[in-house]
Length: 178
Image (cartoon, rainbow, N blue to C red; front, side, top):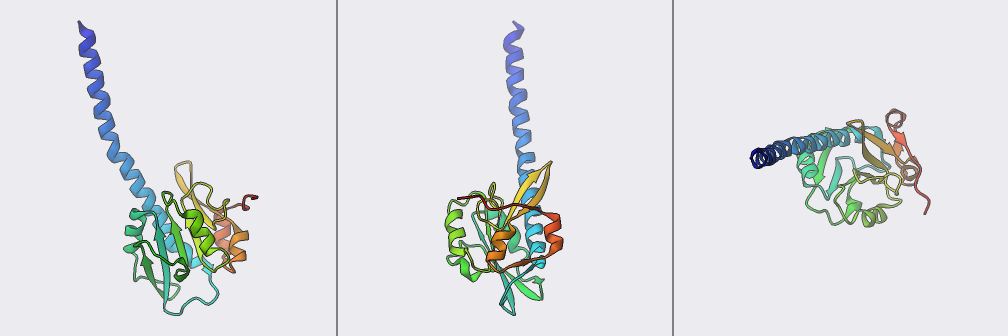
């Protein structure tokens, strides 16, 4: 006689817990994106580009609306004595950008890497194993923290110079053998 009551109570309890956890997971993802946006903003301070335009530094965001929104809030700030411009409405030409951020849900990530290969465009992503797969800078989770992994070989081929301070903070990885 108590079993239906117990099962019903247990079902309601589990459902309530599930509903309570949804905002927490969403909050964690939002916080993670804020950390990545802050990393990206500060990351550009440790990169030297050949022939950087004198007036602006452009970051193009693909495949992540939340990252585009967060980076959009940083638009028009000064970085490296240039005005930061954010192109987040599915930029058609990545060659106009100094930085390309590729969100983990972006299905065209491989095509974007091909379009930017050898160009002085810093490619950054939270795609799993991005730096090992030909990208330059990848975000990865480690013990609840967001960390960087960098592929210095790819950045060198693109004629980008990374600060030794940045390299000390990151895990360096080689590109995967094709």
